[in-house]
Length: 179
Length: 196
Image (tube, rainbow over the protein chains, first blue to last red):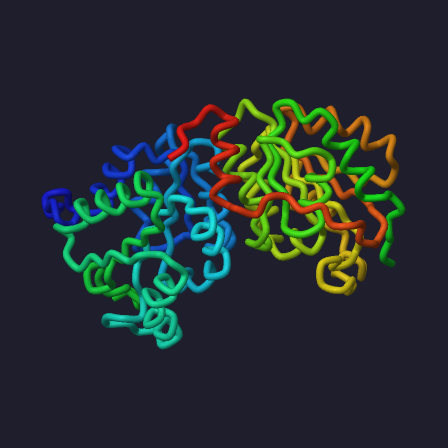
């Protein structure tokens, strides 16, 4: 990509990375996801952040709990479909009041080509909220930095369970067929 | 062919956890937590009462955050079976200070002693070995536990995985505290971390 078209609003993954670093996040867990690619790569490249690639999003919940027991802050990066894999495990965060920050890229809600993504996409926020996780939705790239920063403070300082929801409209259409 | 152990679980765990010292312990829900509590409560112990399938992952997060402390996950075959993918997640990360010890009686003791996959022939320790755990043991005798006790107190050589073949059966319950916030803050206090 031509660097000259890299406007500040297109750099929201870098803004998230900066906020996570400012918040002293030391562990990051992820299931590979197209929307999170740039952020995942920056976290992997950072020697001060331990990254775990997971076999299922559920694993990221107790990892975050264990890291906090040991004095470190964790972020879980996942896609909306992965939220469904975490549901019972979120009991751990609510019961023990563990700080929890997850950043969720949405599928199934805007210009989605794959019908299989729609049911979980439609249920993502309600599922999280039913398990005690507050959702903070971002529609505009300009709001990413401030929202993630506020979410990080709520999570790590007020012991809350917070999901930042990155809307599919903001992420853009997935390229399904190379043209 | 399934193999059922003969070790009495309380005696096995008592020997394994004797003088915990620097050891940080996460127990899976049900009997392993009761066994650890019966062996002696310890400020560095966190007893899960739910989150089935999450014990080894909680140990991973803790081991990465505290690389100078030995971390032990003590759980059962049913609990570990619910988190099999986690064996792969640990194996690729290779935390040297983490040990996952599964008290394996081949049954779901908490729910009426139904046979588990382990009891029906699945060898969990061989799955850990295939995933890439560098130190894997199958323990069937008390004297092996006495030597393994030193291994799990090391912060090198891991991640370790051990199946301890215990006898089916439920000893009288010994119930640890189940207030998760208390348990969380107790471990953090034990490590000298702020408690908010």
